[in-house]
Amino acid sequence: MSDLTRLTAAELASRLATGEVSSVEATRAHLDRIAAVDGDVHAFLHVSDHALDVAADIDRRRAEGEVLGDLAGVPLAIKDVLVTTDMPSTSGSKILEGFLSPYDATVVARARAAGLIPLGKTNMDEFAMGSSTEHSAYGPTHNPWDLTRIPGGSGGGSAAAVAAFEAPLALGSDTGGSIRQPAHVTGTVGMKPTYGAVSRFGAIALASSLDQVGPVSRTVLDSALLHDVIGGHDPHDATSLTDTWPSFAVAAREGARGAGLKGLKVGVIRELPDSGFQAGVSASFRAALALLEAQGAEIVEVSAPHFEYGVAAYYLILPAEASSNLAKFDSVRFGMRVDVPGGTVEDVMAATRDAGFGDEVKRRIILGTYALSAGYYDAYYGSAQKVRTLIQRDFDAAFAQVDVIATPSAPTTAFTLGEKIDDPLQMYLNDVTTIPVNLAGVPGISIPSGLAEEDGLPVGIQFIAPAREDARLYRVGAAAEALLVDSWGGPLLDRAPLLGGNR
Image (tube, rainbow, N blue to C red; front, side, top):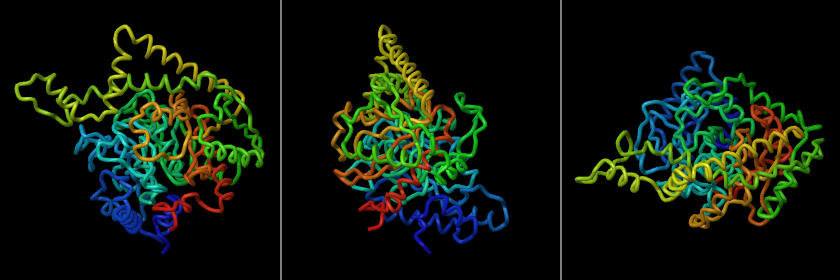
């Protein structure tokens, strides 16, 4: 039997459906992989004690003839921002250490109902604040391509778990690039759906107008299959769209067959010059566009003059919403509590938040509280929201000319752990191409586009589509993926020199 951890989720699901492989065998293989490599990678904060029991139940139900979901029996990693009843949910923070939720996040509940096997909770930047997973209270995650480098953030644990073959699928969240930027630096696929297309109920909130839950995988089809499971309206989420969505897996399969490339108009943003991007990132981006063009796609230059203000606007809107959302961690209702003998409630609250929050969280709470304060609200938060509207209009104008927009997924390959930890501005600029997608609420997907010449590390290309056109992204992403994989002669992860690929 081939190594079950090397199969894509679609391949594994097919073997499970035919009885060639049992869910217990698949789950045990991934748990063994975690035991073998996660001491070095540190993708997981908690590994489930129940995974094999859940897998055995799926096998029993299948043997009894029950009709199960397409991904029934396939293991799944869960970003620790999503609450679970049977595993701690910490959001990477000391202030929630050991916290057990009384309910599951909607996407977790849907994954369980579809028969996926939760393997554990993955590491992340504390409360999803970061681009490197170095801001976790439980230590950094390491990139499987090079253990001295970052796996991206905030969802570096989910991306690293998938890249290191510890899980075929993972759930993540994306507030300004936290699914797509880790995908870029780990050679994986990361999808940020249309805002409201996937429920946020049970996702520990960072910035409620920006947060979006989405899939992490090794192929576009795998992401589409998981998106089909977790997507759709949720009455528990006031921002959840009531749309009826097409099958994303069908769209991905159509794209893999080359459907939709001929005549496809791909926009390239005029105001996104090569300067500021690593040479290997730019070269890989241009090479990927050339492959699309050779198959009949048309490359069209579009203007997005306000994108350059996206990072500045984002780092006013996000901290403002974060300062409000994190106010509930007050030492009174739940979570960590630091007692102050003889102190007031305010003293206990201050001591708890000081001990429980890390430096990056404190930095953003202070920024956000200042931006929302009397006398500054209009100048900062209000102005940032106006910029957001201008960026949305840039997208509207661009999509009147093209079907999708393409950008590099991030400016550089994975940098060294510790390299930018003391330089918040440089850390924030990692999300320069992903942030506008969240500000506008449109979908974006990052797929591997190659290896940078300078360091041999993975690079991603991002495709962006209009709101509600997630299926278009899966179609285009799968078509581009097929061309790229063919040009490499096989999956990119097979080239990973350390834990990811063949040694």
